[in-house]
Length: 313
Image (tube, rainbow, N blue to C red):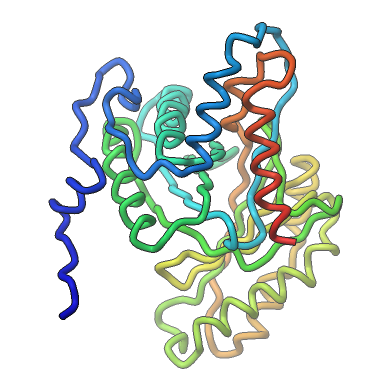
């Protein structure tokens, strides 16, 4: 007889998830949340960090460390959530999301980043985790959404989901898209309108057609540094993520692109919806420890992340 799957309450007890008692000063303070599914990588990194912290001497530096977005999901899980700020001072929301990033590190997040829309009213948070089972990913999703309720007074959560990475392109031979604080990035969202003949089209056909166009188009785009083709796990929407050399190159592409017409020709009777949103990277998790000398924790973390994505080659 098949074992009965524990209900939500039972799973919460097994994995140590409890509704947090939130500190008003630091809503994502680690002391407010119990341990949860901490990866062996994170445990090893924490031990290494704690055992060597006394050897580090603070040193001011303006070097921006990198964050990475993998080209496949072989070793990493990708999570993205989208917010519309409701506060007058956007920096307050950014600071709260930084606290959220600190909290996710306890859940095994190896790096995270915050993107602020340049012209619109939108903020995106991105995080990557060492690959885990579907059940653990579901529990992680629940824990993240629970923690995000602390932002209800500052922003509306418009969207959230794990992403499937279908592939990527880069000009310097790296195994992942790399970006740092201050960089310009673009999210190109593509889906077929619901009143079209999408039901007659296989979901995989839609995604692979988008990916094929992404691959063939990337090297024709002047000013791109890297790109990743992503798909929401739960819906048939593709997002192309691009890192740009500068804002001018991004604008030039967005204004002159015939990408939509190419996709429209691929899908014939279906109506293609496409939009571009331009963002500035305002935070990557490595920035918080970039003031250490010798071989600092963020460098260890960056090297570990690179080792993970290099396995994808």
